[in-house]
Each structure stands twice: as structure tokens, then as C-alpha cells.
Amino acid sequence: MAASSFHRALGGGEDARTELVLLVLSSVVVALASSASAIDERNLTAGFVQVELTESNFKVQRPYDVPENQRYSYDNVTGVRTFLVYAGDKPFNTVTGTLPRTEVRLAGHDYSSGVWQFEGYGYVPTGTSGASVMQIHNEQGAAHATVLMLHVYNGTLRYYSGEAVEDRIYDRWFRLNVVHDVAASTVAVYVDGRRKFGASVIPSDSYYFKFGVYMQHHDVSPLMESRWRNITVYTKSTTSSATTCRRSWSSRWLLASLLLVITLAISI
Image (cartoon, rainbow, N blue to C red):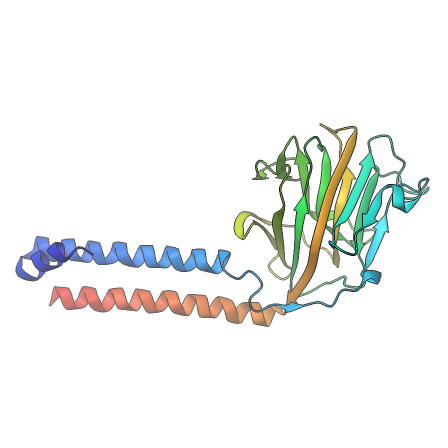
């Protein structure tokens, strides 16, 4: 609030006081917007508990007719997992009719309640297109296979084949956080700490995370590749999530109350 406007309001009549009310209202709106932004983009894992992951949780799925080391590698020194799949590859077993993939299925931590978060640093080299690089999969036999897939098409990360989540995804490490609130049936996607996408999803009985490369149905490159490191999973209960929400609303009610008090004081 400008000092000159404040002094004019104190010494002026009704118009000046109205101006002061509007200035105060603008300040409160800015404060509320800043508060909402901080909730989305500050520490995304605050209030979550890290889930213990061992190498046994990283179950590799790759074309059934080639050795694993021709499509997947894990560097113990750098912690980088590299996934390759060719457009002409076979599925991951002889029973499924699905398209070729080289992915990790995070096993041992399927979930059906609470709020769950996937975090990882991904890298997609130039040329990779028509591939899913991360997904939230439903239980086997579900009416819908997934509630979220992130596809790469010609350098853009997309929600399935639709809305763009992040442009210029090629040839750089990016931090990906995906948050799934089971009770609310919502997903949110953050890239490099900023919220880029959110949606309501169709609920299912249980879910698990996958990442790597899984060929899709159009704009497919002959070779698809992604690299991942620092994969982490977090969770918190719905009760914990509700507490965080209540705290957020408490701060907003405080600001609203402050506005009311100032407005009443000006009108006296």
C-alpha cells in the first residue's frame, strides 16, 4: 500500500476511505495468492513419509526375447537407470498383446488409500517420441489400466496424448513429482518443483507406479529411451492431508479476518 494513498484516506472523505479499502483488499488478494503458490511449490514432500525401497522393489519388464542387459542397465556409481525399447520389439511376455516396453514396476508398495507421491529425476534424449515414461497403473483386471500416463511426443511431455505438461523436455535432467490423492481421486504433476498439471481420475481398487519407456500408438520413433535416477516414493494418510488443508484454510481465514477488521475501522 502506498504511503501517500494511506495519508489521503486518513484525511479525506468517503471516496478516500473507499480507495483505502480497495488497496487493502488488493494486498490481501496478493497475500492469498502467494500463500496458495507456496503450498503448491515449496517443499512438495513436507508432511509425507519416505517409503523404504530396495533393489528388489525395482521389477524390470522388457521384451521377452532379449536379455535384460540389452534393454536395461543400472549404474551403481551414478545411480542412473537406462531404459531402451525399439518399435519392433516383442511384448514383455508371450501372453500379453500389449506394445513393447522396458519399464520398472515398483513392486511391494501397491496402495489403495492415502496420498502417494512418486519422485524421480528423468532424462529423455532427442529423438524419443511416442513413449510413456511414467504411469500410475491400476490393479490387474481393472476396468481402466491406468489413472495417469505421461507420454513424450516430439519433445513435449503430455498427459496421455492430450494436454501438454512440459515443453522442451529433451536432453536435460528434470525433477518429476506425481501426487495421487486416492480419497479425492485426483492426480497432480510437478516438474522442477512447479505444478504443471492436475486432474480428477476414475478410482480403482489399488495402484502402483511404473517408469521407463512404453511404446504408444502414434508419432513413434524407431528407438525410445529414458533415464532415471533418485527414485523415491512418499506417502501420508488422508487424515494427515486433511490437517494440512485445515492449516491452509486457517491462514486464509486469518487474512480474511484482518481485512474485515481494517474495513470496519476505516468505516467508523
